[in-house]
Length: 174
Image (cartoon, rainbow, N blue to C red; front, side, top):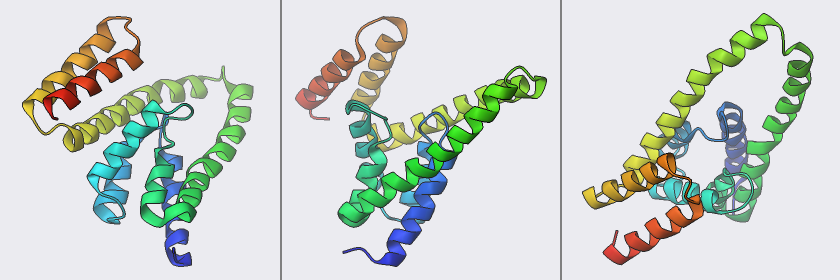
């Protein structure tokens, strides 16, 4: 059973995480808050939730539902999901209307161009979080690097690469 204080704290944190997650993921900030600061989940739960979110249809950060469930059961899952997506959806709709009206203005172009490096930085920070929590052996590093190279340099279906990497990892005991 979850206390109202815990659910309230979860709502505030997941709403903030949703608002600072750029392009769908800010795994580094999630790790900082959920794992290191609040100790609500372990690094393994963080990585497992992200992987689960990647293989499920729909938004890839359905992982927040998993995190909320791990913290406080079904009520935690509902609070985390509503808090992560609700305020962000409202703000996105508001900004989209303003953006469409002013999209050719020089400040809008400058803002869009300045956000691209920021987005790349957030993605790299997320990659580092996943690497630290998921790759513990040089064989895993080689497998992850090969999967990345295959996805980057070829047009192989990502689902096939993920399934093959999971199978290889299971066979060699990663």
